Length: 167
Image: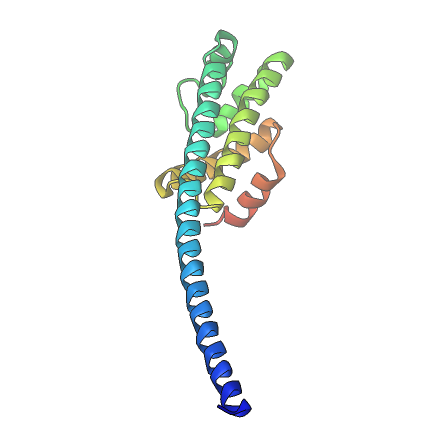
């Protein structure tokens, strides 16, 4: 065997070993991609669970705060049994004492913060479409009154409202 033949043999052997290495690497990468996809899907489920738990906790806290006797009385004065806001609610709000107005603003601010967080989660695809539609409707309905009541409204929620108020 001449030097050229040995070189060709070694070259061919090198190409063969190299192609096997590439094949093994591709199999390894395919397994890693499959594993990563499964991990991402599991993390997505965990994230959805955490979002749901956080939203439920926030809603329960808002409900608990909203059933305190002081807030119930103020709510009765402002809403008078009607949950859907009307211009009469503005007049009723204006007749509250300063302390009652502060308590009402605090209650409404909590709802605005919860709404802002829920809409943000929705933009990430973490909120059910039906829940998002209900929330969007509530925000569109409530925003003019929150502004009138002069309560805290997160800036992201204000921007969202400006973009969607005519939808």
